[in-house]
Image (cartoon, rainbow, N blue to C red; front, side, top):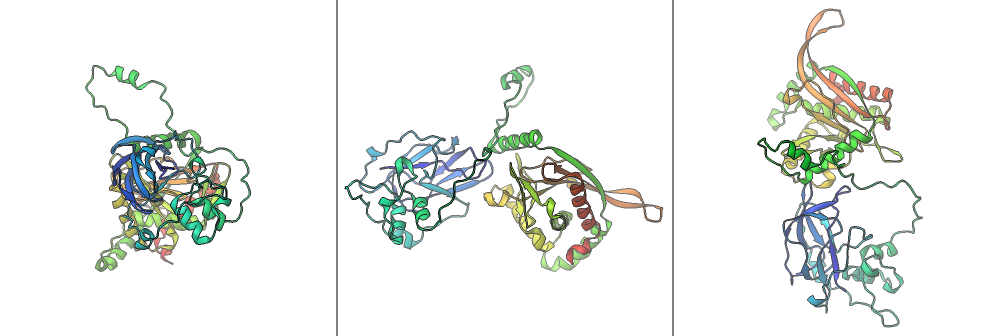
Length: 438
């Protein structure tokens, strides 16, 4: 029976993508692990790896096709003895469930099948005791043979009851799991709401004015949907503080002189990342995310940082930031930002985290309110450091460099007093930067 290859979901929120390039053609023989296509999402270009082995019978989606829905049938793979005429697609749709895809996505790093995997033939297609053929993928047959499992005793979850890798692994290794309790349904992605006025109606208003129509790409659609969801569903509240950063600037200067020989130059943003990571450890109850019907309190400080790119933004995640030195955070942030701007980040590098930082100080913005990036519990908006008159401890007027910050907080996750405690910890770290190295 021909194997259906479906459009994969490369991230939890992906609903459609672009089939950028086929790396195989009809009639080509592929093995498990071979890269067969490149798929573009709103955030990155990913490689698509074959799970089964066989011959490409039909490519059903042309290169460059946009808006290909997740789980849409994109190609058909033939097993031994099957002809191209057998490759007639069945009606696959986005409603098909289970492990139906015959390929899977991997990160943008090239994958090379090992000689051992390519050279090991799959066992012949088995038959039940009554002579009826058992439909199973070559990879599933090979794993079953290695583990000594009888395929006739397994229930297939693939198309038309076909036994796939997951079925064999579940039977061989995984203990039986209790059925999950019913809970509120959570959609993988929230589509952008329909505008109250149609696009055509708006365009008519400007019929007599010169304009350029710019279609929305995948990234802009995702940003619009997620931030609309955030402002409509997250009960934001805002906490504001002014932070005196003269000590930080002086300390940064001293460190950069010492690190110059190593080619390291710390930015103010590196100190902000470290300050937030340590503050989340000081106030662990605020290191949390909203998970629909529960709150998840994280142990490590995984801090996201907004990076502006052409046409949108990324929020790469610095994992375990509380454990890393300033120089390590600086190098990691530079690498993530560079790859973000060229859309070379893998999904695990920009998904997750509990807290985010958005710094517009370098653009001369004094202060602003940032929108929380769900499911995060909070985001810190950072403005520019500006010379201002302040009253010191002796009641005298002096001049200090003051940086204004605003903490946007999800009230479902963090209450007012807890948010204030978190912001105070951030302020303490930035006004006493040497303490962050202790």
